Length: 353
Image (cartoon, rainbow, N blue to C red; front, side, top):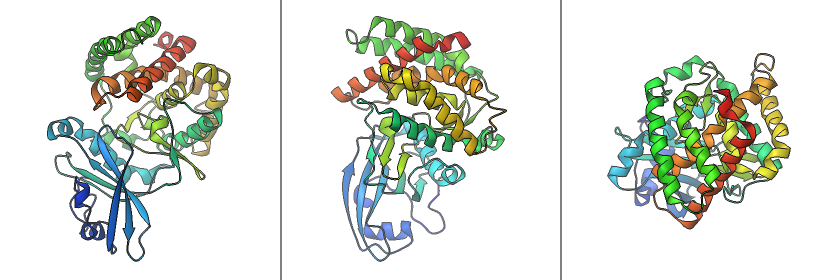
């Protein structure tokens, strides 16, 4: 994976200035005579650019994603870089989730430098985590999610991929300790803005984390880990998922619960929850998951238990992954927390442990 650009292709770069016509010609395997770049998005761990290309046979635009930040910070997140490149170059073709096609992907040996060249899905537009989405958009997103989970459902080959380790008992205890500290940091940061009832839920989730992380190991799939609106593109051809730095092997109900709980306000989620889980379960069957062996009631149960993914990713993302606090980021994390805590109170996932 570290040399996904092998077969004569160039080493990865981490500066947009290095995406020259010569480098791109070598990476893409066809001539690029000119390139201009414009920054797009606001990534926490990487930088993305739309490249406008000139050359015979080239698309008018592609998207480049590069490592960003100081060396020390990159060292902390290099496994995320390794995962994203690995997903696009080794796993994307083995699942049915809609995601940009990858034209080049590579990491340096230490994974602190990476380059991805991806198909540009414009005019598709990124979702808005803060605003939330409509039930129809949510339905399209959960059907797309089934295309990630279904094709590699309980595939034992996933457990042998070195850079996709599943958390063991020792790791779950450590994660519980990290989560407990992070919850207090989160509560202090948003003192006066975080509802006391929500703070109580976060502490209950932290206490349950060691048991939850290792629960139901018999059911697993390739999961996104951060499948939410800011990581989805909505276009005329459907929904596509991006930002695969958190891809892992885990119980698939966590992705489903995380998306629904963080994307919909409680008064929208509650009346549409059943139909969204129905849509996901039906789509799984279309991707080869036997609906008799994985029935609707079990899917609902996994969805309920998966609700702890919302506080986990929200709190850890806010405390450890956010590069620079901004008013929008603060509002987004608070909205995700509030929605997730409401879903936990409604569905009682802690009772399933």
